[in-house]
Length: 154
Image (cartoon, rainbow, N blue to C red; front, top):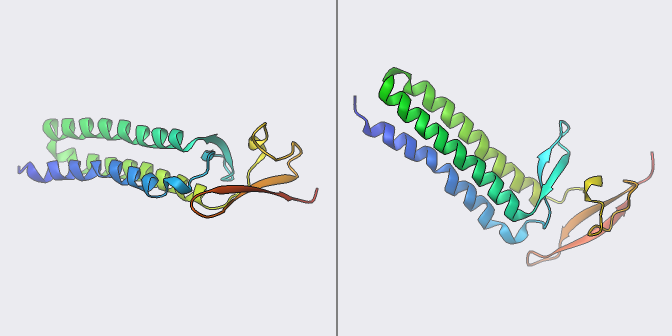
């Protein structure tokens, strides 16, 4: 069996890492100081970090997945070559899911989203009653200003 196709398939899988890094790099100056990186069942952000933390978390998870899937698929290729196609398919789906997660986090944080009660604190102009939200609005050149918007009580 010709092994060169398999090596190229594994190398192609590793392209997810630099493309994810490029996704962060091309918009780095436009990312907010506090990025949403975890979401609840209703797709409301409930976990935040800095852009550096989001980059490290996203690329770190992808790196671990790539190492595990590379070792697993290489092992499968040498021990049971007939099972290599399903192993590659599973690897590509899982790495693609991780890549899309990184892309989606960057895209979500670039769009002006209403901040939630997790942002209440000394650095936030929001009030503790959740009737006010903080909305980041680009002010040009990658700078961010904060404007408080009142919401009526229900």
